[in-house]
Image (cartoon, rainbow, N blue to C red; front, side, top):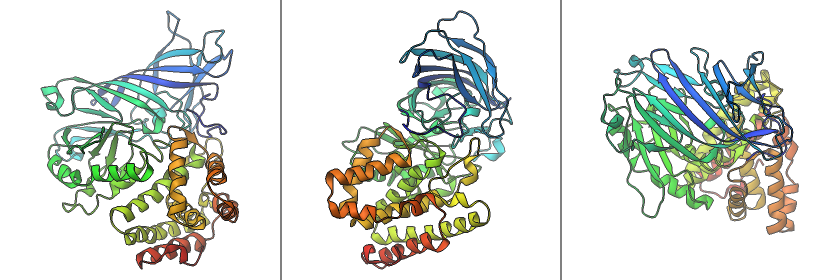
Length: 505
């Protein structure tokens, strides 16, 4: 499940030679020391014969011991010099004679560090809603999973996982709860904050490392009504003080949004569970699309459901990002551009064309501001496809550019081809072709042209050839170019006109 033609500039791992297919976590959460202790067992497949070592990404973790399958004693290992962005590479020698396709199992005992671990946020009880217990949550995107677990921290590698998490507070993971049951007694009926309970999870769908997530606190669950004919379930997690407000806020729309997404993309939701976790106010984002468990800000709890559409964006990531994943940070726009484009199309389906148009209008303001910022600071961050240097921090390029410029580029292609009737069948084929894979911009473009070569005509191919691809993807963008695009199409939708007649593109 790796991309075919790229090497991640933010990873020191040798994932091209050997890659993880499945891993098992056995963790204990220590709220007093603010660390996670335990082990990870990697089940890997060799891609290069006679490989001498496996290299994992780590950052500020304490390695206790390493075991390599077939060896009865502790294995030798070494940590490379720490890089400011990429952390320290973990080198583990492998048994001799491994051939292409050979399986290897490696167990690493370790613990995280505080304050070194950038993936974890530890909150004192005063920072929570209930103010009775501490709280823990993670944020692994874009390259911080290596501080939570030694891994091949690149979206080019997708793996399934299972986890056993022991904690005195209820613990959640970006996976399906195996035990104790989510709708059973809170904390298995034991004393929250005092008694240890082991929570067991399974993630049967391969996911990239940035979607590994954990949260632990005084949490309880309220299920949403199950939709007839759907195999998946949905509900909300929150602290007891706000669980009823959270359930009311999201119960009417979450499952409706997910069902509409399935119909639009032409593929059933495959993760089995779509739950929301309403975090304390310290959570710094509107939402994070962790597999099976979307993290959301408590500021969405307005009491009138006016902000629930934020969930549409995170649900859309189930297909664009979690399903079809960017191979590395240089192609991040494939995640966010597609998600924003489909999110706005769903706004049109769920509400009206005016809602889609208004989203492009508001997006144009954010895009203009960020393009202007990077005009002065680092012009290459105006691009959709960014050529990151080895060890460059992708967080430095985080902005509305991959979201709004990416969505606007896809809208431009839609309109150039002749509208949704021509574009949506291609979108469904794109999902069908790349679901579960990690891809590059080049792979996306090759499929686009390939689709219209097979199923389109001369008009569609000529339309695609008329697009200035280098200007749209690789080159710097004049401020007025994309913002005028957004404004023109937004006004067209807002005024009820056919956006293909709007000028400016």
